[in-house]
Image (cartoon, rainbow, N blue to C red; front, side, top):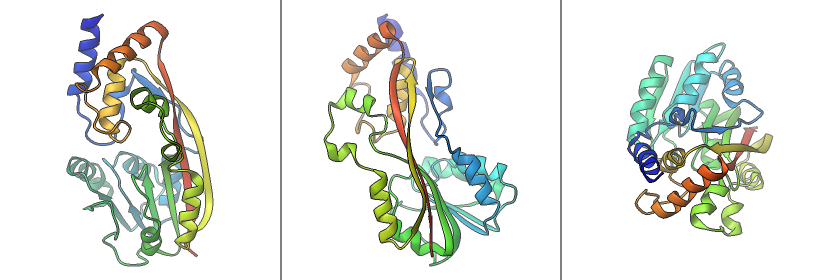
Amino acid sequence: MADHFDELVAEADAASVDGWDFGWLDGRATEQRPSWGYARSLAGRLGRARAVLEVQTGGGEVFAEALAAAPARPTLAVATESWPPNLARATRLLKPHGVAVVHDPDEPPLPFADGTFDLVTSRHPVTAWWADIARVLAPGGTYFSQQVGPASVYELVEYFLGEQPSENRNARHPDQARDGLRAAGLEVVDLRCERRRIEFFDIGAVVWFLRKVIWMVPGFTVEEYRGPLRRLHDQIQAEGPFVAHSSRMLVEARKP
């Protein structure tokens, strides 16, 4: 059993976590998807847009999927990303779709003129700078985004870090998004949140997930958390998959 644990952990610790593709978890973890089908919904909006900005695109995987499914491509399409490995991956994926990928530090101001885009999108942005999003939107333009909601995967977070304070649990609440959008002068068209089931089937899946989603357990390393990882491995072996719940928020807003 010890060798099995060590092998699973070592494999996950050595695997690449570049980009924003979670394919490494196939067969090792599952997550129910939100009911709204973000990539499909985005594809329809891309087909109607003239100028599109994708903010914090990660590796560009979801934006590329939506562009491939769109009934028509926008005349102008730009994506921003800050992390160099993701920037290179996004450029490879998005260039064939006619998208210019721009390095940006993910803080305002965005390097674009006022009123440039009729559609601004973002999937799981680290931070949404509402006022700057409103600035680059053209009058009548739309912001469309899927974001991480409150207390996402907190069963796993609190397994390693203990019970979290209420201000941490309530961060990214839809009410905060609504207030920020309105303060920026944007009209809320749709704002909803769902919690979806996640199952981790082995400890390697947990290790890889925490290495990739670095804000879940800040500073996570196998060496630092080997004891809790071993206990969780034993729990999964005895009781079955570790169950958590993601929190996902759909945001759609319009500039008057």
